[in-house]
Length: 164
Length: 355
Image (cartoon, rainbow over all chains, first blue to last red):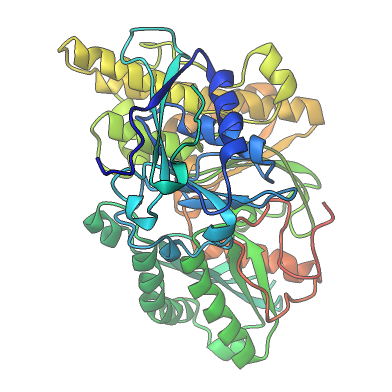
């Protein structure tokens, strides 16, 4: 863990999918152009659902769905805010540069949310917000409950109060 | 149809390079090269590998298509190319090649929608379309219900998946079950020996409240998670995962929800014909369940043979041929690819669909 990592993650309990979406909307308030958000979690942990909330909070165009197939999808802002670039590294072998994705939106002007990007994309920026989503395993626990652990990395996130 | 214009179709949206020649509704040649094996070597899709593979495959694929059709390049009357949606780098190779050919030959160029091509190709197999029909496009990247009044000029998107596409859910469940990539065909094969009623998996967006808000939309994410948890349950108890039963019950849930919602859309819109296309329409349970339930409902079901369901040049040439028949203007030579081309937009340029 580097010096710029900010203590322990904030853990948020999410009783259902609506709560996951609402957390995304709360995060959207904090997000600025150029920000990188790395979503970590197993299949079905709620990564796309959280991104739907971020998209709703930012006020962007188009249905925020899983971008696994086309790898990245850009959602232009409907207002004054940043665009949302939704990347899914699930099918990617490697990601040397986000430029290789040939996105229409520029990352400096967008909020970039990456699913399945842990260990692949952190080198793209000195700052990123890590969101670790967990769901109950196997037959334990209610179907819809999740937890989110939020942790900022780098100077951009120093002193920023994350939802808890 | 022998005096109809000869249309060359070029497909390069993902990892298949396809070139086909169509005259009217007659398919004269259809040649496909795939870079799937290259990606398997890298353990996933590498967009730059896909682009380079298209570049290398295009020339030989074009030559082979001309040879198969027994025509010369100079005989081509119009060029159609998939302009989106798809991977940007891959699309760029096909579009640049198409522009060069159209310019060199002095013929019109039509940038067309790949997803609508999945529907259009059926006219080459089952003949002209009725006045209005529904298109169900199911693939690794799409699960969409289209209302088609005219395949060249009037397509509207009734609904789509809110999260995962049907084929994507199959790929992910395949990985959960330890089956090789791509998961679609492997899960389909495993399901053949399983009990489709072994597990009661959820049908997404099928409760009355959801049907009201999302009559035409699909959701496969909750189903995928339910499968993951069942598989984990067996693993955590140290028991062997009943792969065939999980695959069969999962396949049943996907096919059931696709067929049920499409039939419901037919009722609501009083439409009597459905055309199914896209790579996932190769799925055997979807085909058998759709055949039974559409027959019971008295609705005509058109699904092209499997080789026309996956990505190919024929679908682009078929849509190009329809666009030429409709008398639409050519796309401007400076049109750019659109990796997220909306499904209501049939062609690139000034002649947008009536939607």
